[in-house]
Image (tube, rainbow over all chains, first blue to last red; front, side, top):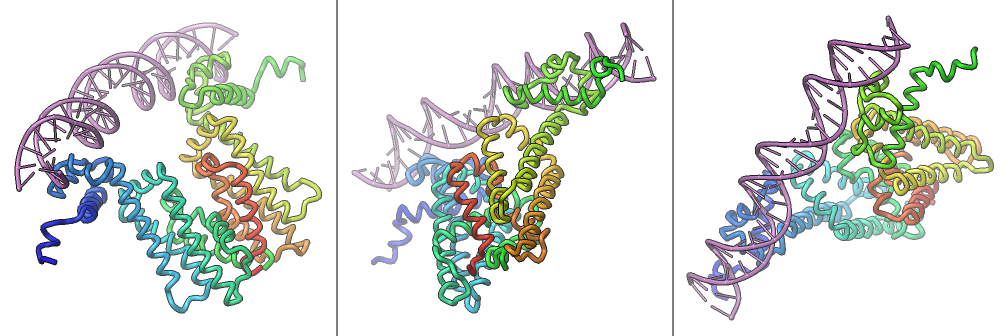
Length: 202
Length: 202
DNA sequence: CGATTAAACATTATATTTATTATTCAGTAA
DNA sequence: TTACTGAATAATAAATATAATGTTTAATCG
């Protein structure tokens, strides 16, 4: 392999990554609507027309950004599953709270990106569903862990994971995260987790 | 009291009711935005200017409609508490499902009114909070009933009522009610109620 | 020949004007 | 005085014209 390989001949994948990277820089600062294809192209040292060799549309670049955002969130949740020294109960709570914190920090620190992701996911329900499935399969692992340790008695872990997902909907919706303090939401989320563990029968 | 009393001298409250009634007729057919003050006034046999003796603004008429909508919902929920022959568990489930059905039927049958209510409540968070408080105090009654019968063991009924409210958020949001079939939502709501009763420990 | 550009074209957004509508208020009648 | 009207005004929305931007493609470069 010649030393020049990497600089002389970037792969299509590498160029796509570059475009995504430069696009995100713009989106963070100015938002999706206020960023033009010409600007992104200039930042990449190419023409606007050439962007279309790598992305079908501007919307498609937005999809790329949304996918990165989702991957980031999923990585954080996977990390919760690897975190040592947590009981299944603690892990379940951490799982819910980490997702809430992730969304909250993005909403306050990068509102433009958050708006973009919401806009994209509004038309790409399939991405939302895939993300939900990933979260549910991670939750299923937590529930199975709890079954093994005797802390939980869950008959159908997949079904229950989905039910937990429904129960915690409020803590994933930008609408509430924007209008309620993070402290209040965290307390409420903890109460919800407590109740789903204990049940009304105590 | 002379027989003429009612026809000759309508009270301000009666006139307000008339205005609200005629306004709703318009809102149902054409929506809030497409209904003019002149039209409402004409339907009431008065001038547009005179409407302002009874309502501060068109928005305020919308508030009146929203309050009627909320009262209607609360009446249905109060009826659930009076329904004979239900166990506390069944009552809790019925409570959640009836609210879901109420919203679903309005969304499909009177989308214009639903849109109006959403628009009003978006700026009148206080009405949402009051409605939440009413629902929570009704839920508290159900929980207390369950405590008395021995089916529940709820330490703090008010706090738990609020937690249940958070858990069932998804089933009160127009966004989900519009995008998911009512059958699916009802099944999911039942699962949520089941889980909140049983808990993960079985 | 593959990758790229720059101009052409189509679409979408912005600015501007126009028309409609909400709201106010001086005046009128009971 | 109280309830009301209808014209005047202020605010909002619709329509239009204009500009900006997304997308396509014929021509160019290496």
